[in-house]
Image (cartoon, rainbow, N blue to C red; front, side, top):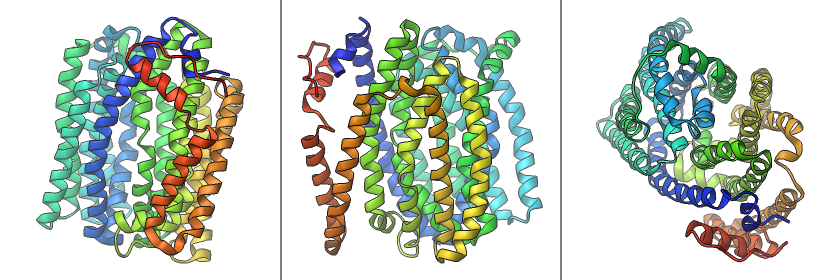
Length: 503
């Protein structure tokens, strides 16, 4: 059976890769802890300040802006993660053209979005908020590219500081807007300010670490766009079907239903906290492993997936069993129905992480269009499921039922996407060790769920006991292995560790 020290011995480079990955993970994790702390404060404040209906309007404006401006991404982030780790000088050859093209597209998208919202009868307040969110999205899409470049280069120190400063600036603007009792436009402007500051700082870091220059090379731009095409369509598909729920809810249900579902989505986004670590640490490592051998790529992806699922599964479990507590803490009075949709959507993060790593594997072995076709199928399935389940479950289940329908549509769509991707990859990401780890984790989850049912009478304090029980059972069952943790720590310090015992 593979252990971390054994898999690191596959090629000579693995120990150095593991050390770099671990240190970058620690740096990004510390940044994430601080930024998520600010985000949690804002997430707890906004629902209380706006109430279900206005919070639904805020979420709708944000979702519309993100949906329109995903077209500006052009798919270059995945292209950067694939190419820049092995040829960093290429960034200056295509980014100037990407910047010019995005700015031209942004004006057209902003006009089309505002016209469409006005045409469908949305209030002036929502149109203005969406327009400001749209301006923020212009910076946001460029920031995603800057972050991908820095991650690909393996330079995350300054980026971690920038992320914290930008998030604190955003939070300060939000709290100021709430303190002055300003409207949706001010809340949207907070996003714009944070992303603009972040963009200026990230561009400076890219100039320092990659010698990034804004030059126009049409031939390199055309080549980058051509090779980014499958990633662009995939990103477009993923964004569309991840935002269909709020947009369709706003037309098929009441504003309060949108607010409740948005609150549950806001809480459930905590389960996605590992995505920056995947994009910032795992994907560049996969790209370098792929350049050395297919065998190393397979081993690296399998073990990365095992670690990520070990972290993601308990997060999903915590969201499920503690849904009533999390909604009360982060939503406040009036949002109690949101707990129903939070429980339904809680398993989606496990599927999301599997889909991300499976897609990364296919992209690296030049099967990007396969990922694209799968995601395009997901768009139509998600749209159909949302319409069907929102309209059927809403009247059937009553208060919060429409949100439960939207949540179930999201989970079923992600399950469909995962099933198709895994059917293509097969043994590249799944082996006997991973299946044993998942089965053990599932057993621990069942035991903790039963314990939670017994402890319901003691209220929120039951979650402390649930967490302690999960940790203890995970260690006893081998889900978390002390010998392999020691091996990882030893690798991060740059020395050899004794081989972990097979298990």
